[in-house]
Length: 184
Image (spheres, one colour):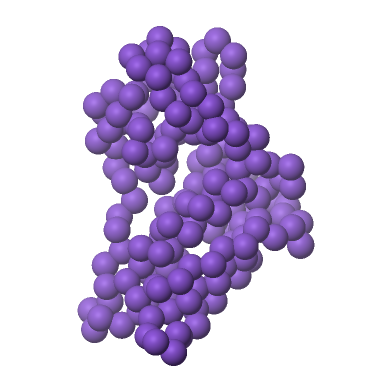
């Protein structure tokens, strides 16, 4: 899906790696870099900047992007009980906008713990990091994780914390990630 697109009307996007919200003016030439996790990473042809367009706004890129595959909504477990694997399935639908690998395979999720709540349901606590300490996309990814984990049946609270210790390095990547990136 790496095509050149000229958007016909302005669109809000997230500047990568700063995480700043910006408006992309109508008439801007954009090169689609990746369409993963429901969001689209594009590069401005004029400035070279990378931007993330949220799934809800992807139609600005054309009908093929509006209809791009979205991450599956989690289904309840057969017996209706909370299933932690469903949380991990949702975490695997969150992608670093610069790297075509999900945050689980990148080794960005340090902890995922579910605790039953007295009133029913589960509280899920997640500790995660980003690939570089100065990356402004951390809060964007945290919100993606919170939203997706909150959609899992049985999850009543999702708390996501961005942590810096231990610092991330490439040794935390899975073999799947290494293969995907051609590092093996």
